Length: 338
Image 1: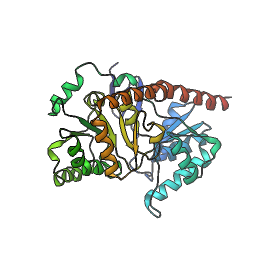
Image 2: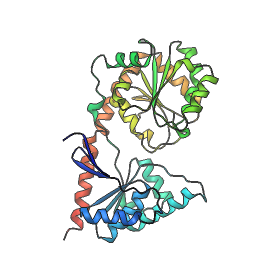
Image 3: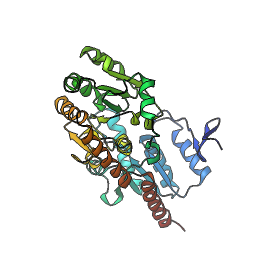
Image 4: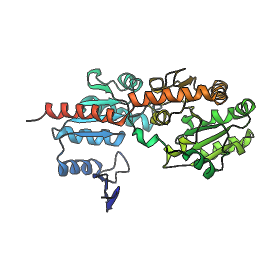
């Protein structure tokens, strides 16, 4: 079978059927009915939901059928009081408190956050770190040089890279603002930004405004992140908020030193001073001083990269995550079996 095959609204990825239910709004009049009908068709032993719509509609539908329900929380929700987002979050939190058999947080920070903000039962909330396929980040020799040539980046230039959805909370504006200071310390430095989003035009304007447009490469959305990381010297993630940024596990799996902000679950991933450095969020001076130091010390950067690879192997291997989920599935399904 090919990686993907599709018939109308149904697709198959790696032998796993994928169905698009066409639910555009949480309050869509037939949204719940579509979810419930699919559950009736499939007759699963367990329902596992992800993200808001699924967490509300899927958990309720599973509960009404006596099927164990698990939800994974990926974000640190802080909706503005009185907003539509706040109302939807309160609804999701109520559903999870009342009907979810298990809630999985992707980081300990996220678990603590949702215990407090959503009022969840501590006995039903666990932490399971996201995992990655480590093999995707072991590049063949020459990959990095090929990527640099493809993107027009000088072969010997010290290269910082960020991979992210380009929106304000990712904090790339602080790295761009600090690039003149990096260039003062490391004159040949370049910055590669991989990803797309609503914030991209503003970031491009900022790069021009601070006089570093020719040093920053906007590569857009890419499907070959493993290849991109092979071309990188230091990975930087200047986020203002995160739950558990999977891209940091990918960077460490690629044996890269990491400079990241100390937010959310990031300190659970990066061992400060060992596999990388943690800096305060929204602090361009601390960010640029740290990345400049690493770019100027390739031996230290390489040692940190090796340490990061060991962390990725020990804690962020997809096989470990899958084993933890399977154990949880078996427990919940067995608990409700006839």
